[in-house]
Length: 56
Image (cartoon, rainbow, N blue to C red):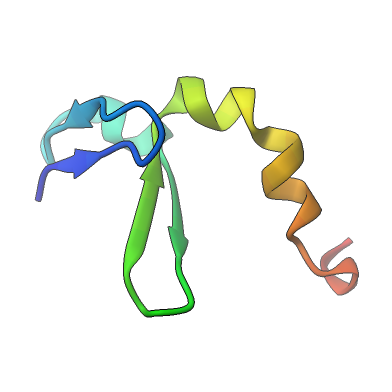
């Protein structure tokens, strides 16, 4: 399955080793959202802010 970044629309194929660096999240509606490594780095504070305090 080809993944598309939900921020910048970059794509990566399923057999591409670069796909291992992507960040995935499950949305409340059950769909998946992906972030490419560049967007994940740029938005890491936003991502961490959504983690429940119990995980820390």
